[in-house]
Length: 284
Ligand code: SIN
Image 1 (cartoon, rainbow, N blue to C red):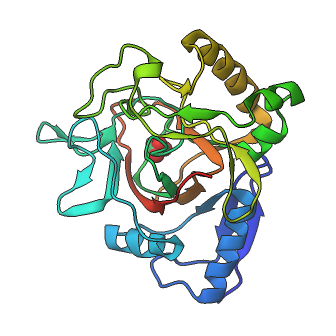
Image 2: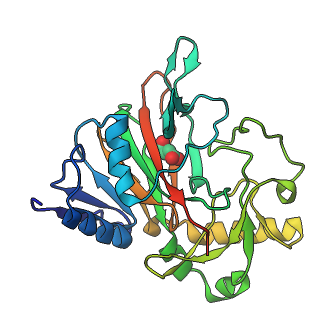
């Protein structure tokens, strides 16, 4: 391996990895160094050249088996014949969106936390980026848990959260779902609000997204009030990093211990992202 350099973002989450060509197979010592940096920094960024879907999938498979792409609002986030690459884009070709989420702002979320075994990681690669907007923000959920006031932390020990599966991160209804009467009725998997990361063995908050989340067993108003309190304490600027995209950046994040969101951007600008997910594990 050539010299692999790791430069921290300086924001308590995120680091740049330099000195790697992601189009080539990874040597075992490089992979070990990336895994170590990933466990420490939670989000890794690689500047580089354009990756084909096959190259993105090959790189991603170093970190585990690929997960199937999620169901979009319509069947628009797919690459024909490929079940593993999700397209995130505002581009419309022949009257059909080529990807999901459009140019809209996406709220804080964890990818596919509404599944019983959510994807452990997502890897996002930029094929086209706008001149302004479209930044992706990440938040450290170890820090969020460690920073909770002790009385709040004591209140949420042992509680479980239902993660709504009906909506996308821009609030749209997924194909095949209907609006639920209230958050308590919304469909989705139930996971512990505090989880233990299987690699680092550290505890962190596991919030998914705010929309239609529900703390199991509580009256709806109590669940709403407690969730508002947790979110206000958890998502603080000092735990977060904003990533400004450069063309052909690849960013991988650990869905088990981070939240992410993205800014909207002008629709006349093109943004085309390809994303893979690493297959799920049970939340414990
Ligand atoms: C995502 O939520 O996975 C997409 C983030 C982005 O488009 O920057």
